[in-house]
Image: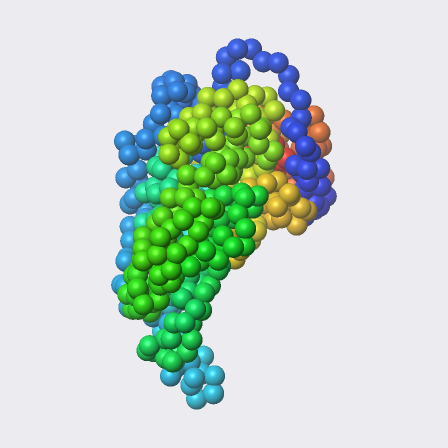
Length: 540
């Protein structure tokens, strides 16, 4: 059987298993194993997957203490990751510096290129690769995967990804490639475990969100542009941000608002714009663009003449609304428990939101101590997104990654279907199984596993030999059992085990031909890739 045929066979089994409504039944275990399964479950949900020996390390300090550390990540040493990130020079640059050092071709240059007066080669010489704007997004993508693989502050990284998708911006729209990194650094990361209303305020006024949903262009109906290339043109109201603020960021699609509310919210945010988008890229409120009249949002009156405070009052109204509490509770429970969030848990988390003013840590504590989270139905009930799959594969194999490796892994995530920071719709990337389970995507996952284990990714290293210490490599059955234990905790369905065992006699696995007379040597890398590609490893 060819290597590709092996991949197809495993992928078909994987597709069937991942599409199942619930995980396969599990046998009862001794109490100590149950404790380890609980730890493995928590690691699967609060991190990008356990590393070799991590269950034992968590057991040693106690699960509750470990969760406490993750909920308060400032005390965790992340110096090793910080050292790698320093190699990504654009990561910490403010927007004005990025705009200056990584400029887009000016209008005259673009016109010369379009008319044929300049060749693309001449353009490339004017703008060398290390000074092109594309580098900014590439380094942002690399940093994300480096943190996911190596950060000790795993829950923080999980929540940064969660909130970035919730308040999504598309890094390839207009000036967003210069803004997206600052958006995550300034508006998302510091608040990922803080208060939800603060997240809404920070994202609402950030140039990235203002540019992505076009609110920076939104003005009162009779506003005439006073300067610039659009001088003399009549501007108008743009409702994009107002609609997404209510539908996706706060109330939810069934949150009880009307089209009239959308218009009123849009009026409240007129004048929230960007100062010199191609040079400064900072928030500014322009009173001349603002609609100063009275607004009524969800039945609450906002008096005339409020200026910038009109938008701030809208955020207060929306983030205190019961629909927002339910909507955010539902999304958090979906992320940490199951694609179909248990209604009773959603209600308890919603009450916690209301009682604490949207305290994210408090809501997470309710989830993480709930019987629904620790129930058998939740165990490995979630399908990993491509980012989660790639990072968990690296972590399971004890992998290390440098800045160059971050770029390679980010490209792998994109090839599997999740180009980082490049979700075009404001919904961001989905957190449900149906978005990620199809034959093509799962085959791409298996191809990544093979590439990883066969050392085809520069700057990336995995040490499978360390997982197999004391194992007889001449016995494929022993190697497979050790890999299943190290990567999956031996919790494998009979179907998956049968498919894997059925390949142990294949010459590609034993590295033998019919004429070979020497001792067999198991192709550990290929076998490990098949384990990483197994149905069980796609779940968390």
